[in-house]
Amino acid sequence: MKEYKETKRGFLIVPKADFDLKHIKGDIARSTCPACRDDRGHPGDTSVKLNLKTGIGKCFHCGRTFILKEKCRTYNDRSRPVHKHDYKLPKCDDLKILHSPDIIAYLKSRKLDDEDLMMRMHVMEGVRNFKGLDFACMAFPAYDGKVAVNCMYRTVDKRLLQDSDCELIPWNIDAALGQTELFITEGRMDALSIAHCGYENVISVANGSNFEVCNFDRFKYSHLDHLKTIYIAGDMDTPGQKLRKNLALYFGESRCKIVEWSWPVGKEMEEVNDANECLIEGGKEAVKYCIDNAVDCPLSGVVTLTDVEDGMDDIRDNGLPDGKAIGLYELDNNMRFLEGQFIVLTGSPGTGKSTFADFIAVRLLVRFGWKCAVFSPEKRPIQEHYTEYASKLLGYNVHDKVNVHDGAYDRCKRYMDSNIFHIGGDIKKDMPTILHTAEQLIIKEDIKLLLIDPFAYIDLSHESGVTDYEKINENIRMLAEFATDKCICVILVAHPRKPVLLSSGKMAMPTLYDISGSSMFYNLCDTGIIMHKDDSINRIVVYVDKIRSQPRMGTVGHAAICFDPESGRYNICHADTSDAKMVRYIDYTINHKNWVPRTDAEQGTFNFEDDDDIPPVKGDDCPF
Image (cartoon, rainbow, N blue to C red; front, top):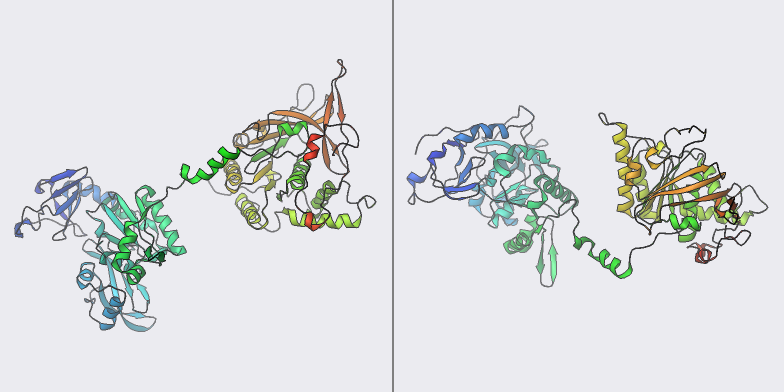
């Protein structure tokens, strides 16, 4: 054969003209081997598989690897480590072929008794010091071409040692050359088990589930990018599942398959943790069954109809759920509440945004049993905020001991203790922390409403190079996604920018676009509510300015409301148009019924459906 130069890693540098390329399919071609064809009985055998795109090839007869001379510069540029590091090489001079009876017996007990396979995969034996004691151990040198760049040692009692200051590369990485499929395991013993079953195109990550996928980077161009299918055959435990996910994200889920170590035994399914256990318990047939039944890796961020088919059928049979009305008559037509809904509430200063938001929370609790979590650092101390909720529930100020007797007060406290939860204390006041706490309350207490009041108290991240506008956008997006993902109604109270005075001296009504910081408050909310005082009628008017899903969540419109400071409750104001010359607004009486269930057994929801059937009339008959 001709004399060819070699790269540092042992690739023969061969001009393209020295290959007799045949059977070209896409980027892959077959050829006779420039290194061994002159010495073979079948010199015309196309034993080389060559990737024309990368220039990397391998002979499956003699095992030599090649790089096209025309691709050398590209290979050097693409396979150079991103971060320069003076790695050491492992001390492998004293390693010997497997010979110790204890080690051979151990491998046989693990069903790994193919000595030729051990030779091909460079499994050797040595003596290493483990915490002051010398032990005979198996050695697994990791080769990059001809060069051993790392070595891991393992005793029969599972003591592990790895040469320090050596580059961590996947073990048996050159098995990927010339292949269209590759198996990746979490450990060397698992890789040997798969190879023992006939799949020698297998590699192992360098250091188990702690492996950093960036250690594949140097081999993407030369070894990995051309692969059509990657079988992720890691362990089934929690760390193994995490590694599987990281590998799938790194290589791209579309070309990955997941091997689950589960196979049928009679009418039952046997399940083990890894490939070697599968080989021991079920033999080669079990390993092959698991590989043959590997499933496509689910694509991150993709939802198919199959994933939501049951929900779609439910919508067909039962329709979409209607929003919950809180019993404010005309305003109920405009403003309804659903689990999964993201609501933004803003308004002019002094219009009672926080008080109205608390009233909504109380009504949803009383009418529908919606437990709520409240992040409201403006309402401090917290015990004072609870007294405001108590007044709304009892119908009178808690200081009024004539109308609020001790029994009702105690029952109200127990009711709030089980249904209204404050988020606060010594936690960080950033959005991830608040949402984490809310998620725990969803799991433990089954809350249905999260009220954040106001947004201005949320700590934005201190990440450098990110503007406040971008930080606010991210926080709003997190809230909207949280509402959808956790199927919880989220109400966010947000202050507008500095109010604008009109030439008349009156304050201009803000819009959802006027909320301080970002237009995303309008863009991402499902329902947008604005509160503004109409000086012409001397009333607060609630404007429902945006509804994403009409009429289930309401309709765009407005209504004037009145407020009772003694109880903290609201009702609507009715426009009397009987006089053609002047429209008068009449405040409907706000009653003082006790909304707290009388016994613990009654702490479900009140049935106020009859309220909605009663036309709003002035006087004591009004439900408020």
